[in-house]
Amino acid sequence: MNTLSKWLGDFVHPPKVARLDLGRRAVLAAGLGGLGAKLLFGIAPQASKRSFNPALIRPPGALPEDEFLARCIRCGECMKVCPTNAIHPASMEGGVEGLWTPLLNMSVGYCDYECNLCSQVCPTHAIRQIEVPEKQKIKIGLAYIDRNRCLPWSYARTCIVCEEHCPTPKKAIWFEEVEVVNIQGEKLTVKQPRVDPDLCIGCGICETKCPVKAQAAVRVTSAGETRNPENQILLSPESFGEG
Image 1 (cartoon, one colour):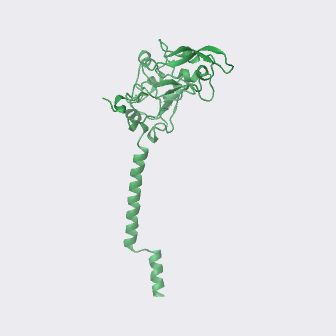
Image 2 (tube, helix red, strand yellow):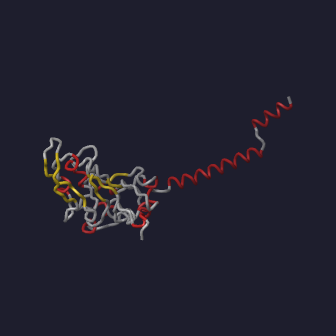
Image 3 (tube, helix red, strand yellow):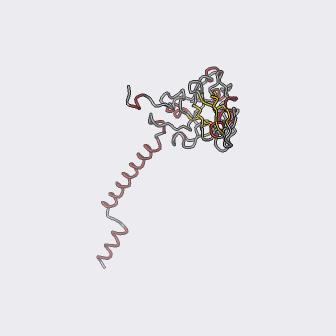
């Protein structure tokens, strides 16, 4: 009985040394877990110079990402004043640190060429104040044509909507007339749209107005944004082992 009582006592009340070791293991595990969480969740996609989320399109005038995240208080004022309803809260596009920060969703709205309201209402200057002429020169992204969905490219059907709505003084979207053969075997001349990356500012009106449903045939990514020179659609010469 004495042995059984001792065993039961040790089971219910472990020796102090055992309890201390267990506590140390728990503290160590918690510390490592916290460090891991910090490393995992504290790193936005932009932390690597070769990793940029194409969907993370910030409003014109937004500071470089680290500064932007440090200043933005997620107040939503920029979202409220956007006349085209283009600015929405981010989910995981900018990592956990970027939750609820503003980004542009071109499938819903576009960045109005004549508007600078978001830069006027930002209380912390995460989006710096800019006048319209300066805003019109800021690239927030770059449009590209999805040739598998574009009507002239894929279906030999005439469509000029994207070029019609392009707001830049010299159109960033231009056409090349091409002779194609439709499904009936008829020869047709269609205007196939192309994007000039030097002129496109990524405003997204081409994506918003594109008549192709579900997913537009012209879409905007964050590549080429003025605020981040590293985020380019073209690889640098160093990427090919040159220079």
